[in-house]
Length: 67
Image (cartoon, rainbow, N blue to C red; front, side, top):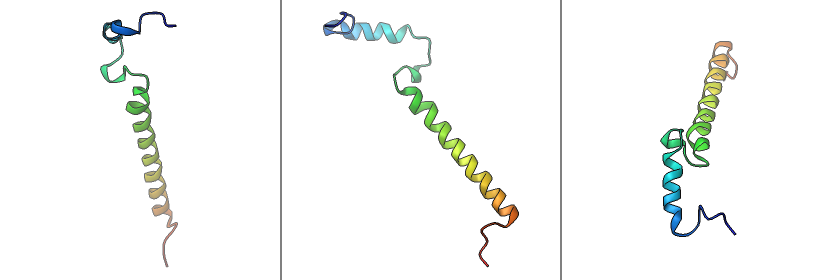
């Protein structure tokens, strides 16, 4: 079935060894941690900068004013 490293009573010891030997930062050790810690904040920052830039452009050119 398995290779024996991740099953049974040996699993906590294997996980401890696995996480202690990684060279990444503590908050990026999981499988999906890069997505939640890096990609989502970058996407939010990029979209907010785009919206701010579009608003400044629209205000400076008078686009969308009510008359």
